[in-house]
Image 1 (tube, one colour):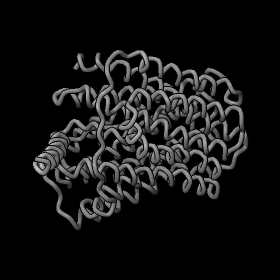
Image 2 (cartoon, one colour):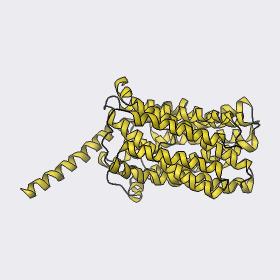
Image 3 (spheres, helix red, strand yellow):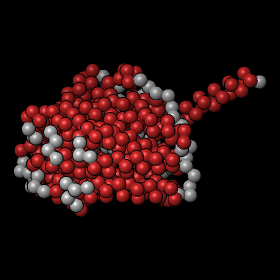
Image 4 (cartoon, rainbow, N blue to C red):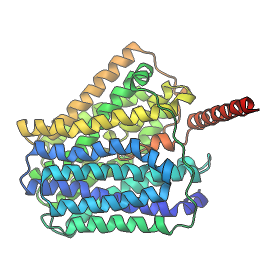
Length: 431
């Protein structure tokens, strides 16, 4: 594993810088929007631009990488992301900010595609899961650390926007200086959302609703915190607690789901998330218990994405897993786009407390649909499940380009054998 990590140090360091900037940027924009007096609903639309860009980028970036290569795509998108953040500091307008958030989302989707396909190529079948675990710790940890950079300067000045641009530029340096050749990259055919829904309704609905919850947590969290917490330091800790919880519970939850079944874990996580949201509404803000509740909420909300993806893989044949990835990204992206807009409207109408009420409502819907599916379809024995690869929010492509599971290896083998058969057919016809 250490040999694989050494071979990937440039991409790991680069993505670490990018996530550091991403963590700071999302929170800074929420705080600055409140300072500038943007309406909550308008801010929700603006913040959803990132998830719109992430959705678009997850489709476009693989095509670009396939055409011009990893390093060129990473470099071009880093420049684009660095430029777009500076526009936020120069032009204080929610609609310009939304356009820039779309560009940022496209850029970061490209970063994920480059990083995860690079790691997938460098890692062996024996070490892929461990390498991805290190990568995911770097992504989540860097995003969490980025929250605390908010304390380095006043959010109503341009300084922090410049700092984000500088950090992104630093992230580009190790990629450009690497002497290792970039890996090869191929894309696969897609499985439609309708076909995926027929195979696993719970995976599709659960993934979409989980996207709504995650989009709300990170799209509107800074807005809520600015209104109810005391200072910038408290806002930083509030946003970081979600990611701390994810780091603590992501792998234990995955381990349990591999052994007792996905649907029971999904129901339990939904109940725990609802309880955490109710506690967050009523406990005193700025108390230690409040922040512990947020850690717990992050710990039970973040792993739901990986559980949904693993459940979909359990219901698919090995040769379908790669093709289904695009549809899973699509439904998750739709949820992440609509979540901040919908909940922001409710926050405008019913008050800031609906930030947590809205998240609770999403998980209540997941719980009800999970119980319905438990009653209408038999479960899969834990021994027959695919191995779960935990992934934090923000890396919607990791599960599809780089899962370290036997099923994925079989799917790749099937895909490659199919291509070889096609090539042999062509050769025979030519002869």
